[in-house]
Amino acid sequence: MLGSLRISGFRAFSDLTVERLGRVTLVVGKNNVGKTTLLEAVHLHASGIYVGHVAHQVLERRDEYREDGSEIVDLERLFHRDNGSSSDSATISEASGNRALELTTAWSWWEGDDDRKQRRQGAIAPEGVAAERVFIVQRGPPIAPLPLSHHSAALALRRPEPRDSPSLMLPSAGFRASGIDIADLWDDIALTEHEERVIQALQIIEPSLERISMIKAGRAGRTAAAKLHGRVRLPLRSLGDGMNRILEIALGLVSIGRGGTFLVDEIDSGLHFTTLRDVWRLVFASAAILDVQVVATTHSWDCIEAFQQAAVDHPDSGVLVRLQREGNEFGSATFADEDLAIITRESIEVR
Image: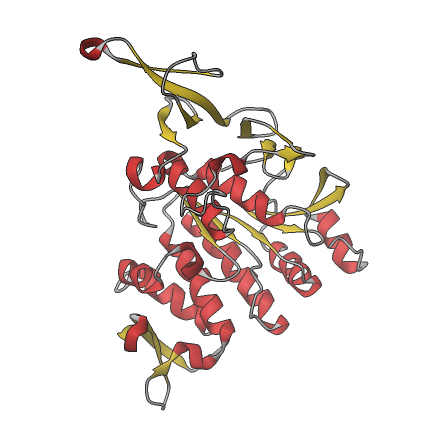
């Protein structure tokens, strides 16, 4: 579990330190202070051998493609840019610098005759050689360099199944925005002990729900259908956006393996404020039982208050992180336990 965080040279952050992360962390702040970017940094750090795929996914979600009109993402956009200049390296680690994930770019070229060619790389390419820019990931044993000019995540690293990946991110627009089919997530946990946990989550909104299943629905592929007590089967989406959001949150929690990291952007999206306390109770309890670290974002005071109320039952597990920005500089403040209780009791503005 990541106990703190330092991000250097990554996207908007030239240097950001978060002194503490919890088993469950809620990140708050105004618009454009880097809440989603923080989630993306943690996602990359926790993604193990799938860093290349996650890097591409981050950029594809934001439509950050190269300016030549191709469908190739611009990996150099992962690095910090300021007033026309840009870095060529980024580091994501604990605040102490331990467990560092280093991302860099370099020039790469072949050297030697046809019989004894060797791949070389450096900050500057020799004149007269055919060189290309590569994306280099290093954390312990380095991962092979990924060409910036190719769909490298697809070529060099297979797309991970959620059950295989140590990190999973639920965007504000839902899993579909990451190319993840919730029907596949359901298949992985159907008829296991996790199925009942998902049903209990949905009963937060609809207590009469008895079971769900994934069914064929026109051209959209498979979708969730619900069986309510005394009623015929109906599409889960017909019960409102909140039901679909809770389904995705619950599926994410049970799909990521032990020791994994689950990121949720705008966790309260589509949820009525009256359900938030029970949703956070579900998140805290599931994170502890399943050994999962959860980092989520919100703009909502109701969500912050519900987070604190649920955190009371899980001492030392819940941490609130407030991001703030002044010009191009970003900072953070962390609150836990008694400080968090004071914030909500006194209605101190932290958003």
